[in-house]
Amino acid sequence: MILADIIYLFLKASLLLSFILVVVLVLTLAERKALARIQQRKGPNRVGFKGFLQPFADALKLLTKEDILPSSANKRIFWIAPLAVFLPGFLIWVTIPMAQEVVLSNLDMGLFYITAISVLSVMGLLMAGWGSANKWAMIGGLRAAGQLISYEIPFIMAILSIAILAQSFNLKEIVDDQGTWPFALKQPLGLFIFLTAGLAELGRTPFDIHHAESEVVGGPFVEYSGAHWSVFYLAEYMNTFTVAVLTVILFLGGWQSPAMPFTGTLQMIVSLIWFLSKTTLVIWLIFWIRGTYPRLRIDQLMSFGWKILVPASFINIFLTASVLYYGLGEWVITIISLLLILATFYFIRRGSLSKTKQDTVRVIRADDIRAQLSSGAEG
Amino acid sequence: MIVGFVGALAVLLMFVASKLLAPKRHSILKNTPYECGIPASPYQWSQIQIRYYVFAILFVIFDVEAVFLFPWALVFLSAPPAVFYEMLIFIAILLFGLAYAWRKGVLQWR
Image (cartoon, rainbow over all chains, first blue to last red):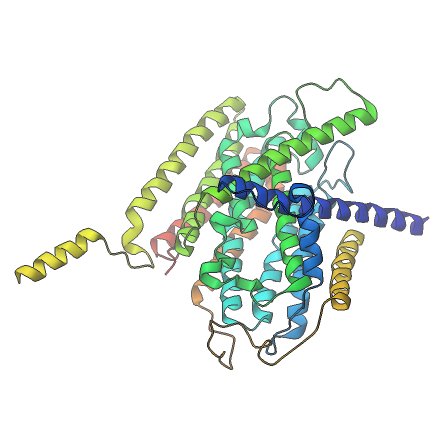
């Protein structure tokens, strides 16, 4: 009996894993294609029909590539680090529902579980940085730790305001609560904070200072190659998918659709398709942001996280809780939240204009040079 | 537990597969740590700057606060009013701490 249960769960987990692996393969190709289109290129188009077999070729290439262990590396930490990055990301998937009944185990403390597990992957990045015994890797690992823990707070707080609205940590109940209006309408500020902090948690391009090629040449991954390197990237794409899925579940109404004429299995399939198409939209948004924005500097990144996102997320919680507590209409949250978004953008704009003097990098303006030259010429 | 086991198994399988498939031709130069073309110095772990530590402490403070906020988020509507106001005071104290750190210039990356 118990053995049968274990085998059943084992099979379900394997199914989940293979689903995620397929998604990751598709995502690598989709990202390259999307970026290529943004940059007016064609992208991969040689392997298979229009390049659709490219991810398989990549995977084969990575598996058959030599796995180098640097001579001064801390061997055990170096080998185990990819696993420590991959596992927390995968463990989150235990409780993420894809449709009404498509979930491994729907925990009552689902949101709490997700926030608790997701921060663990910082450990893996630090291990990778330390184990490589390389200056770039060490700096990259520390940067990763600093960035990820900074953005973890607004991430958690955005999740928390959703929990306050839905009065539940159960992801299924949260989705059911969005039957008429998705939470994105009640929590525009929350959505903004969640997506921004989520992007930073992923280390995707506007926030990828910890593996920036031009600064720390790949950060914690600089010494890795072959299968170990591919596990890091597997984890990164899997986490991209996770953040997109969480955005859909928490803010965009999950598998809720305007009209559902079907019942039974057909309903499940249609809602799954609905869910996945919403997710695709969010993923496309993430790729779009990557293709459009340049990388932030580390001081900009930290001050943005601590001075704008953290206070904004606290205000958001305060606002949501107060409106619910005093029994005001939920449209009040929408309006104030929209105003707060405008205020946030104002502060971002103002900050970027006025902070140049205190920056790490010395900024020399053309006017200053001209003034110096002219005064030198006079004196 | 089992899900974690499956994930670990898959990753380990990948490592084993690569170990079987991948070529192994080591050389002393190939195994040296990556550096920008110059010989790597013998001691590879550079010093850690204190600012990471400051941010880590700030994170711990707010994360512990989040642990308190989670149960509060579910009960404050049905609990007596004191619960709601106490948490507001708690958040206010923490935000005051953040403002103090800001004023002290800790949040500025230098």
